[in-house]
View 1: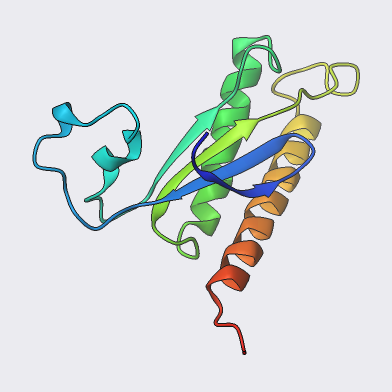
View 2 (view 1 turned 90 degrees about the horizontal axis):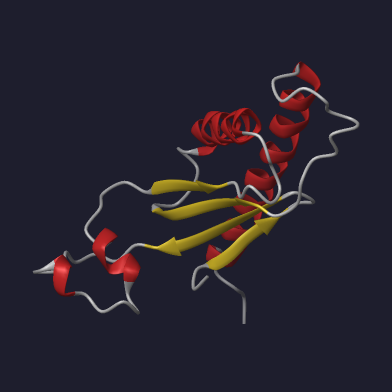
Amino acid sequence: MSAQTAARTAHFALHMAPLGSTVPANPSNLPASQPLAMLAGMAEGCLGVVVPKRWAKRAVTRNTIKRQVFSVSQDFEPELPVAAYVVRLRAGFDRGRFPSATSEPLKAALRLELQQLFHDALARLSSAAAPRAT
């Protein structure tokens, strides 16, 4: 992925790509090497979620994870810079510990880890944006 990794936790990675300030004249003629150029003129950021079947076999589990990502991201949306974000599930949750995909313990664990992910991303992005004393 060409976007920078903004934060990682045990199960998730948050990638971000800043958006440009100009709208391409003809987005259909963009080279394949610039997929984010189509998003260049957006006034608001966007969020995508990738939950591979490799890490969440059942559709109900994947949908639960996606719903939690979108829910937690809304809490952090005002603080995040305008950019294209992708939250990627990079490891599976233990089915022995969370047998039900819609159980409250799984939802609580997802919410806690996603809050940590976005909090770490905000800390990293704000420290990168802060001017450095020379």
